[in-house]
Structures are given as C-alpha cells and as structure tokens.
Length: 494
Ligand code: CO
Image (cartoon, rainbow, N blue to C red; front, side, top):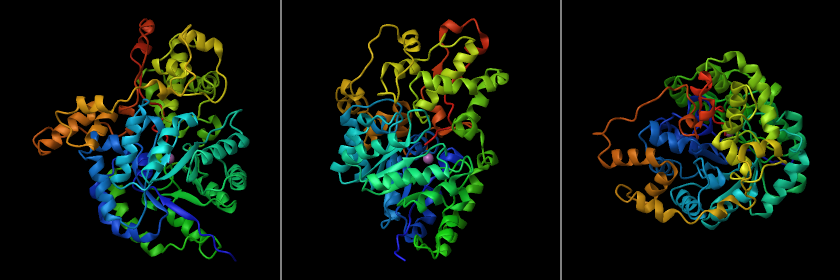
C-alpha cells in the first residue's frame, strides 16, 4: 500500500481561539506548549494574521511582531503560517502595493514561512501583489479560494479559479470554507476535480459549525487532498476546526496515516485545556448550528444578527432579515460571505427590513461594493439597485489598488514621533489609533499608562474594527433605525 500521509496544519494558535474565544489567547498561554508542538511534525502551525494582529494591540497589550518572533524562536522546526486578506492586508480597506510589499517582507523576515492569501470576492487582481511579494521574499504562497454557494459558484468556477491561481504563482491552493458550507460529498467531488487539474498541493480549511467538518475532511482525504486544517481538541469543533487527535486516530494504519504520536498531542492538549478554561468559552460556540445549512448564512453572522436586532429592539424581524440576506446577496452579485462582504450584506439586509423599504437607506460600504471599490463581483449586480445606491457615479472596473499612490512614506511621516521600526509603521498603517496608543504605551515602559481596556468578550474580535455601517440620516424619523449601528454581523468568518 503506497503511503501518502495526510499533512496537517494546526490552528490552535490562531483560528481555533479566534473562532471560540474572540482571539484572546496570549503569547504566555502559547509558549509553554511550543516545544511539544514543534515535535509533532505538523505541515505548519497557524499562529498569526486574521484578527490576531489587531487583538494583540487592542486588548492584550502585546506587540504582534514580538509575538511572531517569540513563536519562531520557540518552534524552529515547524513552518509558521498566517492568514492575509490580499490587498486589505489585515485591515478593512485596500492598501497601496508598497504597503503590501513591506508587510509581506517584514512578516517573512520576522518568522512567517507560509502565507495564506484570500480575497472576499475571489477577485484575483486583489491577490496579485501579495502573491508577487510573498514569493519575492521567499515565503510559501498559499492562495485560497473563498468557498460559497450560489448559482455562479459551480465546481467548474472553482476549478477554473484554482487553475488561474496556480498560473499566478500559488505554491499551494486552499479551499477556504469559512462557514462550513462545503458538504462531505461535494468536498470529495471538488477535491477530485482540483487534483485532476492542478498540480500544486490542495489544502482544505473548514470549520465544524454545521457539524459536518470531520466528514468533510475525511471525504476530502479519500479524494486525495494533501493538507487539512485541524485544531487540538481543547479548542476544537463548533465554530473552530475539527479535532486533530480524532483525525490522527482515524487515519492510523491506513495509507494516509499522519504518523503523528497521539501521546505528544495529548501532552499538548493537556496544556491547552488549562488555557481554554481560563478563556471562559461560551458553550454556544461549541454547538452544531444547522441554520447555516438552511439559510446558507455563516453561523457567526446569525448570532450577531440576533444581538444587533435586540439592540434595535426588533427581534421580531429576525426571520425577515434572514430571508432578506440572500436577496441582498443576489442584488450585489453573489459575493461570498466572508469579512468584509458578510458585514456589508448583513448590515444592508438589516437596513432594508428596519426601514420598511428596500434600499431606502444604503450604507457607505454597500455603495462602495456596488461601485466596484472592493473589486469585481462574481455575478452581474441588480442595475436598478446600483442606480438607487450610487446614481450616475462611475463604476470602477480596473484593479482597485491601481488607483492608489504609494503610501508607506505618508505612514512613516505620520508615525515618526513614536514608531521605532518599520514594523511599528506597518502596525500604524493597519490600525492607526490602536497602534499609536499601544506603541506609545509600550515605549513608555508598558506600565505607566492605563491598561488596555478589555471590552465585552461576547463581541467578536472584528466587531470593534470592522467598518461601522451607520443608519443614514434619512432614517432619523425611525427611532429603532437611528439607534442601530450595525458593526459586524459575522462574528468574523475567517
Ligand atoms: Co477559518
């Protein structure tokens, strides 16, 4: 029997705690387990990017760059992986190419080996610069397909996209199923077709939100997937990834045996159990949520929807909003629901329902999306809606970043009073107020200033940073709408 071991990326240091514990795991919670993690033989350990960068500075008083260097030092034998939002880097707007270049360069210099790049719209032009610079500075460039379901997102669509990404230089292709919508038999079929048409390794990323994660991974493995994502058991399942140990045991003695030592994994798990206890995980995130399968709306988006409607005292509108989301998504050309499009579509659906009239109020972000500021939408948009939203304004059809002049010098100038390094300048470029406050606190010795305030844990990490979609003044007559500030309806689907 020819051996073809399944490779595993463990997400315990990034996506697992981002999905279950609002990204609150600290470096000091990670370091004691690093020696063991480094011995397991993982393909990579995901430990940076996503929401970690923002949360480090905003809530944990940690320098994200320092965290990365410390992890690299503690795990010299394992590739470290990060998640990068293409031209958005880790922020919520498009950055000029020189910022993308400097960020890729510094991430790799400070310890990142593998960068997973994605774009919410699967617009390859938004990933072009990142791909080029990751490769230029010696990183492994893994490019992700944002998986979703819609009349345009056929298997053929994804296979074509993957072939294009391979041509663009992808060293591996990731199927990024942030909402756990990819069902087991669909995973089998998609992976088979990708393996037939693409020669670089195929890497599957899913969650266990809808309870199908383990089955999806196993079917993908049967179809020949090269790498899958799992999380060590103390923070596995639910909104996070399926458990590492369960898959390792399942594959033992088969041609796809990982070769991992369950004893070592159990040692690492013992440590993270104490961390999970400390992080006080809401049991809700561990339950199977089949609404996602019914409404094709990511799980995190549903729970935030409920809390946003509660704020507006309009809980009774829950099912109306649920029904409105697919309509808005269709009007907007079927964007996959992932940050930031999930926030934009969700917020617009809420506005449509609460205003009592569709597109009476249109958020700034919805206008931007319809105007092409985020890139090309997967399908034609509803022109009537576009007209209502942006009038006769011209639609952008070029690569959005082509409209941006170099920005690094501007950020260097603006941060020169406190930035001590290019890394600090990049922190400032991505999160200006948060980084300035943090860096000044750090420069002052990190004790004198007031500690960074821990806000309501229930809020998702991106909730504080995502663009606030505010009700337009036109709605002032409606109190419920006026008080509604929809910040983030997704809970961060990464
Ligand atoms: Co994820």
